[in-house]
Image (cartoon, rainbow, N blue to C red; front, side, top):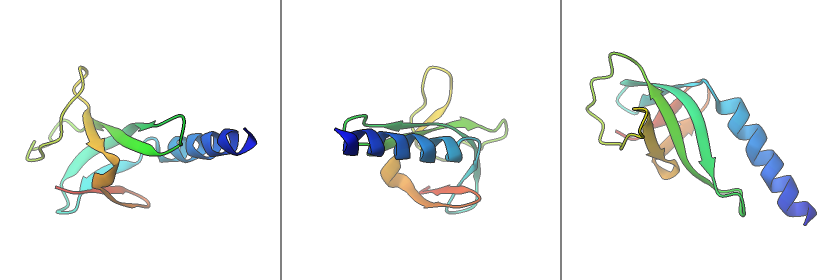
Length: 89
């Protein structure tokens, strides 16, 4: 039980640190800012990221949007995380 709690806390801390980071595609297009991270509470595995788009996004990406217009990007499309989050085109 303690291991599961620890996994959830580590996942929460990582998700909190990622919030607000710029999100760009591998080709350099700015998509927006990371708004939320969706993860499986049982395993702690990341499922997707929610990205609030910038106003001038060219919409060349094929990611679905939620009811608020945010991109829902599967976590396996994330290529790198650093000062920015880089996702596949």
